Amino acid sequence: MAEAGTGAEEIAASRELWSRANSEYGDEHAVRAWAAPDIAWGIFNVPEQQLGVLGDVRGLDVVELGCGTAYFSAWLARRGARPTGVDVTPAQLESARRCQDRFGISFPLIEADAADVPLPSGHFDLAISECGASLWCDPARWVPEAARLLRPGGRLVFHTTTLLVTMCSPGPDGPARRELFHPQRQAHRLTTSQGGVQFHLGHGEWIKILRDNGFLIDALHELYAPPDAPDHPYYTLASAEWACQWPAEEIWATHFVG
Image 1 (tube, rainbow, N blue to C red):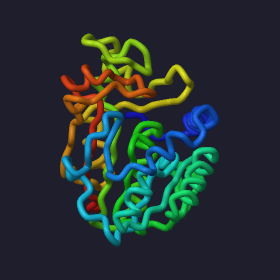
Image 2 (cartoon, one colour):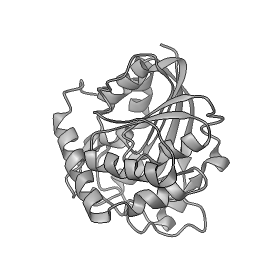
Image 3 (cartoon, rainbow, N blue to C red):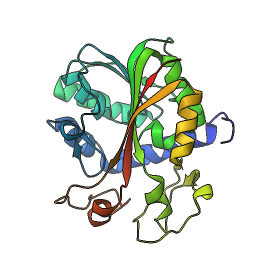
């Protein structure tokens, strides 16, 4: 893997992409996600209750890297955590603040690059990313920052799309098919049709960068769509039929040992 750069290109691309998405959909998606009664993962809403990735979060200091409209942080706050949301897109954070007012849930929101967070080292028990920094920021940049922010023994949990679904997609936004379209070595850094920059690593690459930054891997959850899942109305990554047969998304659970 190449050494980390400044990330200026992907920061600008992500900010433009998500500002445009925010203006197109307003707070509609944010409000729906904030109102969800239970934590669910990914485009097919796999229940956390079924996976058991997070465990008891009561009393934990949590940083969400690439929080978007911060619905995941809101879910954690309802369960007794003390989250802080970090995102590079002002429009997304403005939606998050309106949702905080609407739902009566308050926690800090910081406009910052997930690889350069203006918060002290060793301050958090849990760092989390649900297709935020984990998909839209170079892992060579954000994984070391997650390590810096965590206390010894703190956990890093992140959700992203699989390399398999990327290689099986004729275009950068899907939908995935039953054949390979991209060589694995060319899938590391891809620009979407809407201009955003995504990062896709193989499992061996993820293991290396995590271990090089002091993380031990506790679990890897490959997510399949539930049998009765409908296609997602907005995200075209994969159909529910495809994702019932092959994992389109995955969750890594790790802890920091330094």
